[in-house]
Length: 494
Image: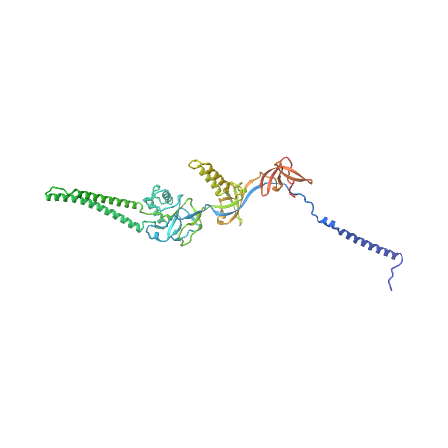
């Protein structure tokens, strides 16, 4: 039996309420569905990018510091290659000279060499280091003279072995000082070899024989004259010896005397060079001492040809390269901050800007000023240096510039030779806090004046400015005929 809806007023009211609820619910669903549905045009419009507006940044007020930053290498300064100028030991017949030259003790990397120090040994003999500007190029011994002898004598006096007067002539006083120096270092000086001693004996014997020949010639001439007189008396003829006999004696005496003179001259020349010598390979003159052995370039048993080592000063430097635009703002004497990868920080000073380029330019000036005088055809030679100057790395603003940063107090940096370090050099700073904007905000108008565009009240206005220091993409500006304040929004793009 079916269920009947209640009759009466209450039942009809309930039915009407239910119907109205269903209608309201359907209407709300339709409204919601309508709000979520878009036509194709509406959908395309909703995906369209908004119109581009200007990109702005705020004007800042702060101190601006311009710096040049470079990556450099840490090393010791004034590197100098060292090579031997000749044989170590005598080459005039002694056993050392005849033996093949072999390195028997190596230079020690990192060692400090002072005047009189032993750099290395070859065939068991020393190679000494002395201070001097004239390189060793020959053996020094009795009979030699010159600036190299003079600087040897000066060095001997400095290390405590006085050779006497500093004359530039190698004499007995110098030979004695050299002998004391070698013996004080535990080595035997290069005294005359067996062959030298034999040659000295032969020359002395030749002088003795020549002297005897002179005596014999002198005695023979007197006997001949006496005999001739006696024979003349016996013969009763009263005639003297034939003149030819007296002339022959005189010639014999003259020849003997000439031979004696030659023997004496040969002995004198040899004894002038006879004595303690300094072989060409046993001394290395360096312009500045002390030095530090940086690199060893030979091995035990090698024949020491070419460079045997590289020495440096004890000063630490940082060598770096910067673009030409940065290099043009650097000057010698500027302060630098140096930081290594492990965080070590020290102070430095710009010691050299431009490397060999600056020296090359100076050399050209010196050549021009120091010439023998300008002759004919000066116009063409002058044109060539101009071309060279155009190619000179210093003259070319786009060319990289080499820097040398000295480190007065290297501290822990001394142990980091061969490593790298960041160098920061301050090249300029503003006077206190100034208005700063990005470089991209500044543009030049048709009248040649610098301007920035400032967004105010939805509009962009041009404000003339005077540009100052620039650093790290920022530039100092000062309003020139308009207003510009901290916090203003300047346009840097769209």
